[in-house]
Every structure is written in C-alpha cells, then in structure tokens.
Image (cartoon, rainbow, N blue to C red; front, side, top):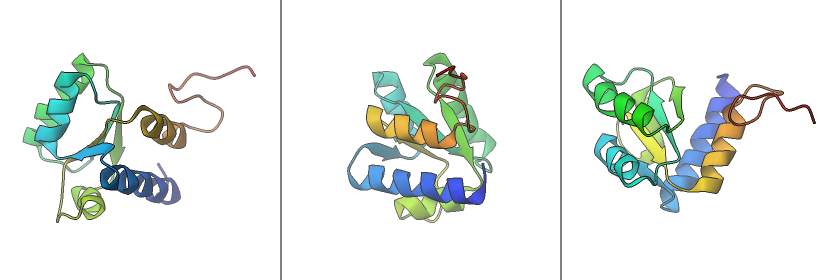
Length: 116
C-alpha cells in the first residue's frame, strides 16, 4: 500500500472511531469478531507477536478481511494513543469503502476482477 493510500485509509479509520463505527485495540477487536460484527481489521505490521497471535487466528476463523499498515505508532495516532496493534471496523459501509480503497486498481473489494 502506498503512502497516499495509507493516509486515506487512516483518515477513514479516524472517522470510524469518532463515529463509533470502529473499535480500537486487541480486546475490543476480538470481542467484535466473536460477536460477528467485525467487518474488517487493520493490523500494524510491527505489532507484537503476542498481539498478532491473539488476532490473526480469530480473524481467519471468522473470515474477517485484514489489512496491514506500517506501524502501531501510526495506528495509535488515529486513535489518540501512543500505539495500537489493531483497529477493527464494525460498520458495513465503512468497511466496504476501506476495502475498495485498499484493493489494487481494476479489482473489486474482494480482489476479484470484474468484467464490467
């Protein structure tokens, strides 16, 4: 993901947190995933192995899409923290927008190529 796309993604996450359409931190993301309300998770590439272990398996089991951003400090700034390992989106429309933003040009949010 290029820097401009990541900035736009972080802006959407910030809006989601302020409107309570996103949750911040490992435990809140895990709770949303268990409840079935988590639509997409954005995980810091430099998150600790412990944090990744807590999140990755559950997201895979629940088939929640996951995106990676450069750092926990970057994600933390979005949420007003020094650092955070993960932010989860619980709003369907916001999640679709984030997935569309992160999808390579010419593909759909799920990575499929449409024939138009």
